[in-house]
Image (cartoon, rainbow, N blue to C red):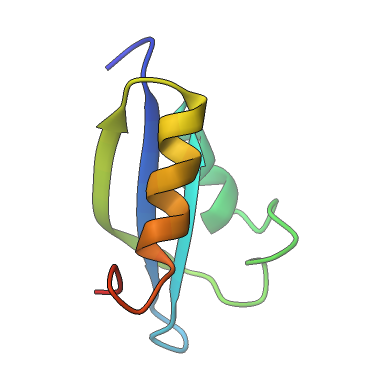
Length: 75
């Protein structure tokens, strides 16, 4: 899905908690999370990808990320 931003949800296999984010390159970002290269998640790895969706642009991805972090958007 080149050209799209992706909003995604990861589940920590260590503590079961979810992490929500957005990126332009989901495979690379997922790898960075699992390699401990992302400060906010490095102590919670490994992760599995449990949800993702394509967004038309960065603003849309940010809105979706914020929604998914609300009570209404939680999984």
